[in-house]
Image 1 (cartoon, rainbow, N blue to C red):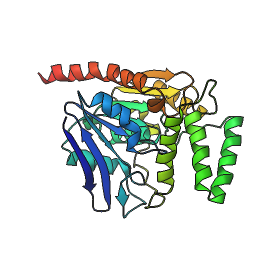
Image 2: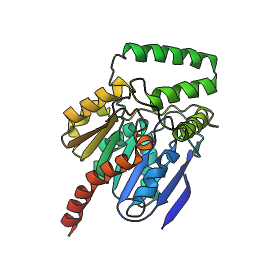
Image 3: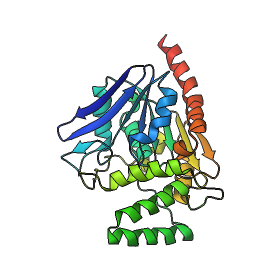
Image 4: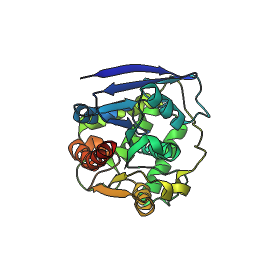
Length: 280
């Protein structure tokens, strides 16, 4: 199986990436509490039939940067795809990665075959937290003030991996350990905190312009805001499908990799067949 990995050199950053397999391209963009390793199960599943790309966004994993403020995540992504000779790709993002994917689709619709928005955020979309969420966030902010990274990490994983609305048992210890390791690395990243610039176009104001076929996925144990963001996307995007995971929080692909992978494959296969038939 073809595999390419290393660092893509920009003028102000070295983006770590991996490209595995061959065929139609799927690019995965990680969450803000993880890094590209969160996609291990997806690479194993899709790489036999697709070219799978994943990378560490600035401030995460093995990526290093000399500029940590004012850069554009979508510019980094565009440069990486060009470097890897990718003309068109399916984009899959989760959480912060979903925000980058949507922003990129608006900026470069000609390069995106299909879009998967998993547990997405949406810049400018504001929702009043539930009382339980408000109390937990207050507790989390108090820990931020102390600078106790280990306790911050544990609370963030409790919020996003366990979820405050979960009824059944929590995810496995193996998943928890992986999330603690990835989020802990991000919290102690050698480059420090990153502050990317906002894209020139705010996605919230242009959702009806996104003609790209889109799959929106969320978990019922996630933050209420994520559910409402998904409602907004489903009601506004012209070409959209929705799927939800019962009693699952933010990290859909880690908790239910088989179901997550199958939903994506079922979504993209007809789109790719139509594209191939039109290409002759």
